Length: 598
Image (cartoon, rainbow, N blue to C red; front, top):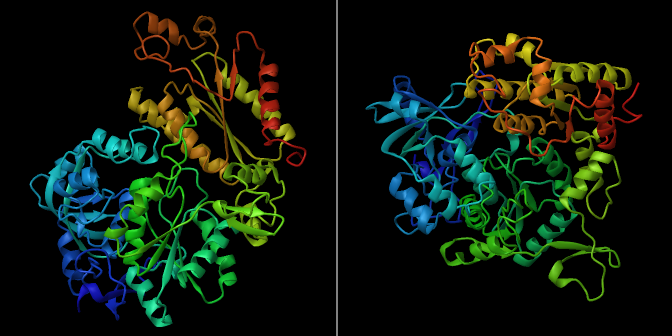
């Protein structure tokens, strides 16, 4: 059997997950990307058992979440014509020219980054077993290159250079080295959700062939499908005389996006509105939010899935703006970049402007086609999130009632959300005293369960093996952030009171908690002179006598929070007033209301 003509079928392993292998199926009339024009999946069924046995004796590499998404699309042919992770020549060519060494368009690097320890463990091995976090062996990589990419150059040339860009943030967290080489596929990463929608490129192609679809327009999305995008897809289907492939990303998207489970529920609820003219299929892509680089990449992936047309948004795959409000990319930069590569693609790009609603006609138009004098209505993502938080109405002209219903269940108003009050400050600043008083007040007025994560208690119970080095202090705060996020997730309140001297780990804790609820940073900014007067544990005295090393505020720095939600000087503010300040803030933000009280 030729691997290029294989399709995925589902087999149920003992774990209960559905894992796809290959079985023979007929092909599709749509050419895949590349000179051969055929899909290049990397799992060969008759070799799987042999390769799996071989992998047991090889050094292993556990893949990150992004690498797991990448390897799935490498193995199932979604990244055709790539046969594995990019070697140095391929990587540098893509970075500088957006093309592979043979001049084929492929604008985004797909790399297997590793840390020093992982590289050292490989020693002289020329192959390694690639695994997920549960130990499932996914593939063998036959290593041809071990190289150290120039990440600063990639950040500037590929992603635009702004350190706040999601792709650059991710880049800085990966290992400094990369391994290049071909893959021998053993299995795709197991999944346990939305199994009926997790189709590889050949499965999607076969459905098109079975249904007799000739023209298929693909739509990329990482957001719930509201009326504007629904109307846009209808216009695209009509203009291309095509059926629709609704192809949402269920891998990694922009930090802060609505989770893919909620989004998929929304898609399922509106599919009946398309009749028999659309197919919903999930794509396990790790988006880089790369705008100009990513738009054409998305088109290549949809071409490999058998689509003939691809809807191109005005700000396609754009990450928005940085913390200063500056857009990472221009409003048409992504669209124009993709259109400049039209001749290199085997899929027709269909550009669209932003859709707006005209109440006079009860109809959506592209913004450049609105009748003269007609009013234009739209709601920003920020406004929609605010209305979900407050319980305000979301009009039917903006979204379908069934979609809003799902969003309200998944994203309740703030008075039903969990939150974390995260105290930070020097030893002796009064953090724990205020935190304990706050908990008493919250238990009096709020119905939520409350959990205290005191710095000393966490050190004893969760981090007893850690030292007071900078790395271990950061790890301790990250652990607190993780526990707080789990408390917040079901709607509880976590009150954390560590010193938390470093901005890095405070940011990390915030990022974890804000995935599930609110985060309120309280800097207890008591002057160190006052903290020394309160030195009940005698720590400052020991540090000044040289008996204690690494004391925050003495011989180890405390990085003052730049923009905490609340700043309190406990030298001039009594405990009850401090608690009142925090309670008033929580009420103003909507976390505490009469609805939340007993």
